[in-house]
Amino acid sequence: MSRVLALDVGEKRVGVAVTDPVGLTAQPLTVLARRPHGRFLESVAALGRECEAELVVLGLPRRTDGRLGPEAQRVLALAYELRSKLGLKVAVWEEWMTTAEAERLLKSDGLNARQRREVVDKTAATLILESYLGGQAAQAQGRPS
Image 1 (tube, rainbow, N blue to C red):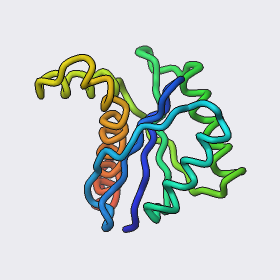
Image 2: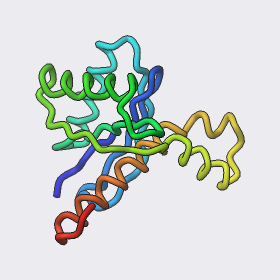
Image 3: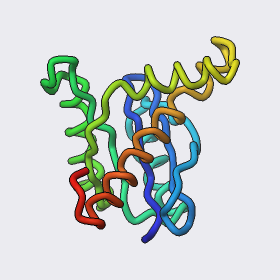
Image 4: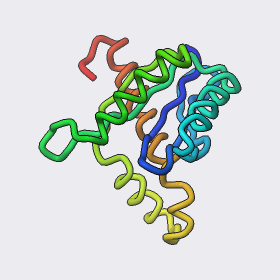
């Protein structure tokens, strides 16, 4: 397996995580500014090249009732743009409250609010990537993901 990047797409910031070189584990990488949009796209492309990633996974948020809201529509539009403008291989992976889970984990690790704010987005991206990797492993073993 090759390296995979994962993005936790927010309105202002995007958390990024990456797999290890053999694609087994996920590590937080960085946080990108969402604006200006052109610079953001350039940064994603550069990270993809730098990490030699063959796939970018975008977390697709669902509302508590299971519907796709405007946040999910933004993610789907970004997925289309990454494919069409940058030629990247992109997958979307359903996520459920990863930012809240990241906040909870960081708080339990003793980080204060300022410290959490600095790493919560890339931690959420790591949770998305871990979920994706687990789903892929389950699928490879013939189990439902």
